[in-house]
Length: 241
Image (cartoon, rainbow, N blue to C red; front, side, top):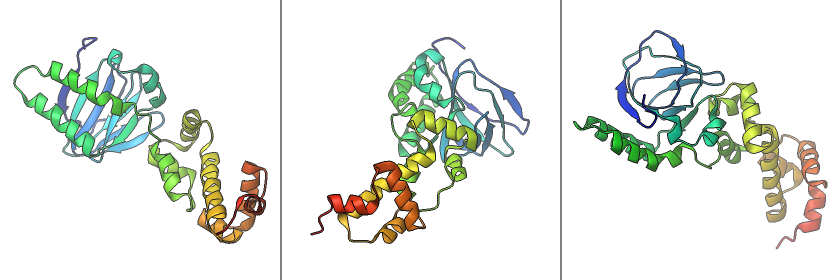
């Protein structure tokens, strides 16, 4: 492909497993069916609830078992910031939300035109590339923020990001500068501090509210983070109205 030309086309895939890598970035937007994609760190069944980005040089195996159709963009590496894409060494999946559905429709409209869609697709890329390398939080981080009071397993967090557990832990630490369990502890302790200052719940009740089964578990984690116990924190800071 040309160094500055985007290839945008409809593709279908067969049951035959193929493994290769690209010298370009590939963006896959499902229209019908499921595409199985395996990379070193991901095992993904790509359907119309999400889209997938493959960075340059990423070995991947792919196949589909049923009738399928995908909108695929082959994007020259020079057209997207490599420093950001380096974070997605095993590929990155995105939710097919209303924003992406609208982008998909625009791309399909351009592709269905009789004239060469290349320039218009390039203009669209300039618009939506910011959504490919956002500075938002990973889905597993958002999950921990919303479900911190539940029993959260590493396997669940890795599944959310479609990574194998070992790689997920490495990836998370690179992105967030702490391990997943350290981050979960931070979230729980911050929530505990709010309850200590804003309610008259006892320590056992607060432990339950933030995901700890025992008073001692909260106390130990709190002391590791704040160098004082929850009781000492409350006595020092709280004034209940």
